[in-house]
Image (cartoon, rainbow, N blue to C red; front, top):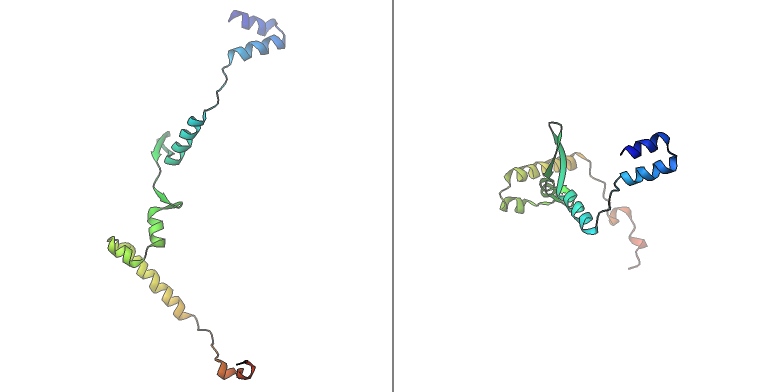
Length: 126
């Protein structure tokens, strides 16, 4: 160790760089198995902070990138909700259906013209 400090003080930069390279430890690359394990852990766990410290906790379950409750709310029909005793979601679904019906009822219906009223019967080939 004394030799290192002596080279630092008196030595050339080439000698110093050689000695410094010998002292540092290189970081090794991960193997494919280690990379796969790291990727699996990142998918399964997430890091949160509790009292200024990092904690690893399991991620909440998802379906197609959505939380399970949100996925069910978007895709379930009333029969499935009833069979699985999800009455709160069924009530919300009914409320949404009523709101949609009210919105459709407040919009004026488009005017529909029949062929007879427009007089286009002569243009038909049959």
